[in-house]
Length: 375
Image (cartoon, rainbow, N blue to C red; front, side):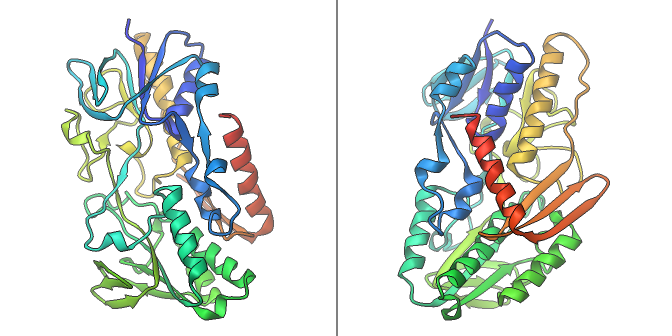
């Protein structure tokens, strides 16, 4: 029998491996990904302050694969034939009985001049280049912003932008250089970060005011140029621009034969099963799922989805009804280099804890705990 095939090597994919083995599943597992590493994107926010290096954030997975008896195939997925049960890659075709898609999404880079910006969740080299340029500046304007997928407004990841903004504000103050810089936050919405809840949006904007961060809100993006952010409400002069575009599904989704959402994500049901396909599941940023409009695109929710997907996949293989739903939960510590603000949200409540040093160290401790299990 073909093994269970998992696409991806990030949060959802690796959580699925652990959950499968913990459940007692002992048959072969095949994981397909372009690199046998986990890159811990959440901690890129600490690179400008010199607190993390590429080595800190890049975790080779050879030991993890050996411990969990995973066969790794290095390849890039190029398509899918769900009826023939085939994954198409640049390294040949792979057959499957059961498939979990956890290969992540991608950012929409269609705005004119977006090459003049730095993407917060792109790569270590991109953030290191931003850091080097920041260190070379004696002063100027730093712009930070994000937007969403116009066809799927929930497909946005704004948290890292807030963290870079507040972290760099703190860093410049520690360096005694803050008075030489103008910091500007821009967003097409007048209430950016709505998925965090109204209370959190108010707190974030109030924190910007306390830090002397200017805001440029409610104006549709037109694009970028060298030294400029272009909006329908005017231009923002910028020596360095950090920008997070909206998200969409994996590049091969259009030729996957699977149902897609308006925003280009693989459409799943409440059990993380791809609509209309037996034993094909999706978890993390590659998919779109039923739930509240604040449902986040973040590592924590990807882990919850992967856990539910694995439980339902095993139920299906055992001819049992699907019954496991993932918890609708947002947990975010918005870090500012030496403090953190906790935002928690589920179907019943929104809770906000104000910035504290303890929450910063809680985020550091979680990073250590999470990465340690893969080393």
